[in-house]
Every structure is written in C-alpha cells, then in structure tokens.
Image (tube, rainbow, N blue to C red; front, side, top):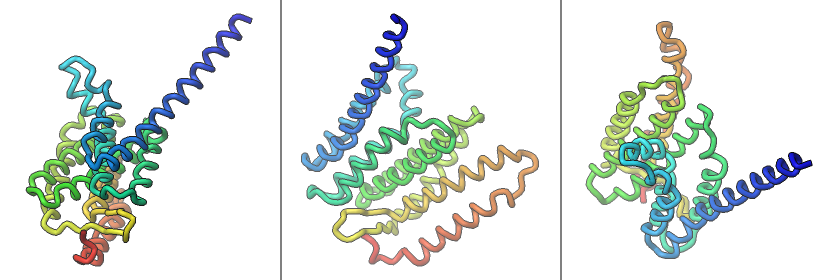
Length: 262
C-alpha cells in the first residue's frame, strides 16, 4: 500500500512539474513579445530571453563557451523573435500574435525534441528567423554586421545538426557552412529584398528564404556523403539539389522587384 501511495505521489509531482514547465514557457513565449511591444524597446525582451537561459551562464568558466555553443540555436530563435517584434512597430499587429504563437510552440513542443529530423527542423527555423532579424536590423548598417550575423547563424545551425549525428569532428564543417552563409549575405546586402504583407507587419527577407533552402540542401548532401561514402554519386543528391536551385532561381529572377522591398 505504501508503494502504491509513493507511485501516486511521484506521478502527481511529475504532472504538476510538467504543467508548471509548460506554463512558464507559455509566459516566456507571450511575455517576450508583449514586453517588447509595450516598452517599445527590445532590451527588456532580450533580457527576459537571456534570463530564461540562466543555466547556460551558471557554469564554470571553462564550460561557458561550450555551453553557449550548445544553446546558440535556442538563443538565436529567442532574440530574433524579440527583434522582429520590435522592428514590426509599437502598434500591436498580426505579426506580434504570430510571433507569440510560434515562440510558445517552439519552447513547449519543438525545442525539447532531440531526434535527428527534429534537430534539422530546429536549425532551419533558426536560419529563417535569425536571418530575417539580421537583415531587418542591419538594413541601414555596415555590411559587416549582416556578414558576421550570417556567419554565426550558419555556424550555429550546422553545429546543432552535426552534434546529434555520429560525426564527432564537425567543427570544420560548421565553420564552412558559416563562411558560405556570410558570403551569400555579403552578396545580397546591396540588394536586400523584403516581402511585406499589407498592414499585418509581416516582413520576410528574400535572403532568409534562400539560406533556409540552402541549409536544407546542404544538410541533405552531407548526410548522403556520409551514408554512401566511397560509393557516393551526384545522383544521390540530384533531386534536392535541382529542386533547391530551381526554387532559388525562381525567387531571384521573378520575385526580386524593388516593389517588394520595405
């Protein structure tokens, strides 16, 4: 009887702790956007995001950078959500509701996943939102800002996927991905196209779409090379490469008119 009571209490505690965890994440997802809009400043929102990651910073100095690199994707998502909410304006718009919903879903459902397909999805979200924020905030700044941010996002996204794979030596691959991101960002900085959707406040940079497609194809090609090794042939990645190239060409050739720009 004692054992049955113990199991019941243990399950009850697990349920309560899970509910508290969901509630706190929900408050963070909604609060980070609301506090940014109401204060008309991204500072409080970013502080809230960083405070939620206190475990990243509460470690010994020698583990700090390793901990930081392991949490880069989550930090990129959180800070990007705050910056996108801020640059959408002080008036409450549709984009703010969408950002609150996405960030809450990210914190509660997407971030805890650890399978290889899930880490790829997490990385693609980090690329899309991270590049979107970097393009919008660096529109009137020196190109070096967007280049450095693109490098960091590309490095973080690649490292996040590779750290879950069997390949333990992923530093060089992640740095190469970051370098490619930065080069593409530098090329696109002078002709930054941002798609807008009326008065909703939704703004999607063309570069964010292009690099998200590139990140998917890049990861697919890497997995194929590992899978087939010495028997690798271009035909193994033909379909996603052709699809990615065609899609990017369509976006660049037919949807690069300045009227799309902010």
